[in-house]
Image 1 (cartoon, rainbow, N blue to C red):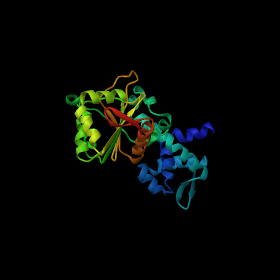
Image 2: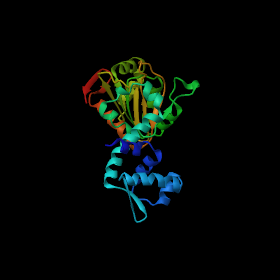
Image 3: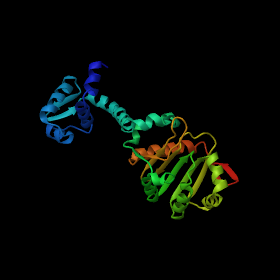
Image 4: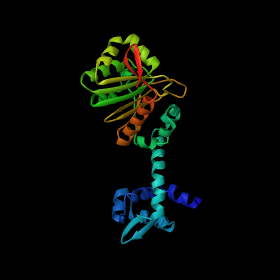
Length: 267
């Protein structure tokens, strides 16, 4: 691809926004102006550039992508969405262990969409962040993969299980041992509940936690130095929930199903 074409697409936010808009279908200048909140003169300059490069076509008062333009923009969309996920929370992704995520899901990171970093107030440093707790309380089901033990979770999950929420947990062996040793009565009630499944992953999970519900995805990663701080990176779009379910299934495929604290069988 010519450098001039790369520059045409990526060196102007207006041109890039227009291309991404027209992938949805042809539009006239008034629709373009209103959607992108631009003036006619400002946009017509960029339209001319895109027409000259063969990326868009003017036809019966409507602007549409050319066939080649459609191919290029379809390829652009994942890249632009990936850049947005990264740039919106640049400091977080730079300082945390994203390599704990399987490579094929790293390649789909654009599916996370708009993410919000949630951290607890200073007076709740060892409790669940309020927004995360609120979403858990509204959930119909919970899927979690976790290598980090928080004392706030056993009682909350027991409360939700008693209310009929379906819960599936994949935990590391050290987390399972701590539950067994320090929260034995809670663990036994989990085993007795028909709506709770517990799996133990034999190897290093790598990420602190990933929680998927029918309404949200919450990811917590370790710092690159291995330290952890109480937080959740949350997303609420359907693609992010599907991404989280695939992450859960990835770890589940290598985990064992626990029927009680002393008996483990392969799932």
